[in-house]
Amino acid sequence: MSKPATAQPGLSDIWALTWRGLGPRKLAYIAGLILSLSQSLIMMLDPLIVNLVFNALEARDFADVRLIVAAGTAVFFFLIGTFLVGEYLKQHAMNELSANLMARAADEAQRLPLEHAQSVHSSDLVQRTEHDTQRMVGILNLLLDRMADQAAMFVMAAAYLLVINWRIALPLLAVSPLILAAGHLIRKRLKAIGNEVAWQEAAVRQCLQDVLQNMEIVRALGAEDWMMERFVRERTRLNRLYARRTWWQQAVMLTTTSLSNLIILVTILIVGWLAIRGEMALGSLMVYFTLVWRINSPLESIGQLWGQAQEQIGASGRVFRLLEAEKEPGPTAGKTHAPSPAQGGLTMKGVSFRYRRFAESLLPVESPAEDDEWTVRSIDLELKPGTFTALVGPSGSGKSTAAKAAAGLLFPQSGQIRVFGLDPRENADAARSLVAYVPQTPHMFSGTIRDNIAIGRPGASDDEVTEAARTAMAHSFIVNLPDGYETVIREHGRTLSGGQKQRIALARAILSGRPVWILDEATSALDAETEREIVGMLHRFKAQGHAILFIAHRLTAVTGADEIIVMREGAVAQRGTHEQLLRDPNGLYRRLWESFEPTAAASP
Image 1 (spheres, rainbow, N blue to C red):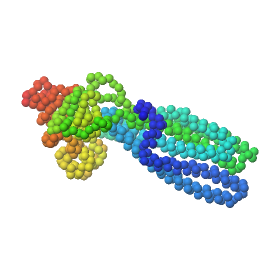
Image 2 (cartoon, rainbow, N blue to C red):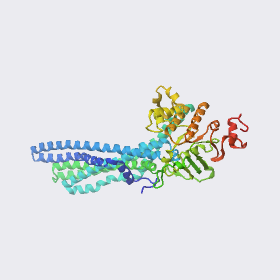
Image 3 (cartoon, rainbow, N blue to C red):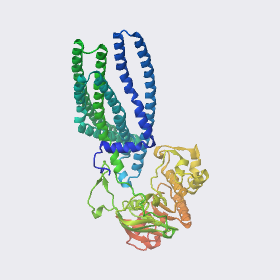
């Protein structure tokens, strides 16, 4: 069972996640690790050759010297080739792991509930997906590759030392593990530093993204200096954390290096004393000096690598919080069913919703359920096929929230929503696949205009895309662009007007062919004449059996609606047709109509 999102992940959690992330490359990675151990064999080759050569020279057996050098050279090149093959296999597997972890994190991020995702800066989610996942790849690389390689060298050197002189080797091997102590003793501090650095790097990225993505507003406000001061302030904090991290890293390195050098010095004195007394051959003496370094250097490296791994483990908590955060409901076993034509359209019964607050850690922040916190309260709505329903009300009355809940983007705390009989709580994707939602400020994706329309129904033909654009009254402005439908849209569609983006979004909805349409002030940027034409088009689709919910920017656009629902402070204040609502002289709709169209005062 996975740990709760509040817990700092342990090494076993990271191991399980990264091992699964290797997918079918597991065997290739293991083979790469084994073949890469040839690097340790290469490092052990020269002390072996030195021992054999010096012993042969002492015996004046020069033929053996030539044979040893020739054989050693051949083995060296063989091991080099083996090492290169192993490195290729490992790198290929690491690339696969990196891609899989990023894809997993991106998928988890896009499945966060909308209110949850909107409580976190987009740059933070990008940082977790792109950068923090690579820290986890780095942990696997540190533990299974670099540390394993150093451990293999230590084992081989220790075995060789025991063969040469076990009486000296045993005390040396007994005290050498002290070199590992520094990295292990301050592991909690290193984890904490790694976690702080990861969060502050995300804060710096957020500042930078705010500056670069909002140049127009920043310049219009003359806020360049303020934004840069904010960025420099956050970057200065990050630099301080880097300095603290470097201090602890250097403390580990200084401790491990000092212990290693002390052990080497004592060993050299003992071995030198034995050689002077004639108790050790010249070849063995030279090998011993080399092997002492081959033992202590790997332990020194392991101590430092272990410290680095602790930093990465501390930072990896950000990825686990994303993976373990609350997600939108997916298919529920035994409860999902196909859309039912007999339960056509969309219904909302007693729907109430309030926005929850979430901390940057992606954990919910509990708050009391006061009545005045409810954005939408006890909404009843029925969109039957072949009907046009309008939602109107003052700003802040809950219209957009109700529309997002109807579209399956928000999940109410009470009440129920059904889309052709489907419950979004049981399978949000299936319910949303029946609803075309067009917001007031539609998003434009990187790519061409054709791509941005075709995303409504991937695989649609060029003719179908063009026909959808004609119906949405977007074709005329598209063909007048230099590259027509192949015009590349810049980030967030900055080169398009608000009205052009809204018409492209309408074309997406038309192309999708979904039976329920929800338009949240989707014509607010259009002139009155174009809006009338769009509304006429919507009524034609209504006649074809579509259910349409239209949030009006101008009340004149909804006078022909089958039903107008008037909202105030999150609740339904009135409902009826345009003519029925105008008959109530004290009604909210009448006041809204008169404030919008003063000349149309009295009764209809």
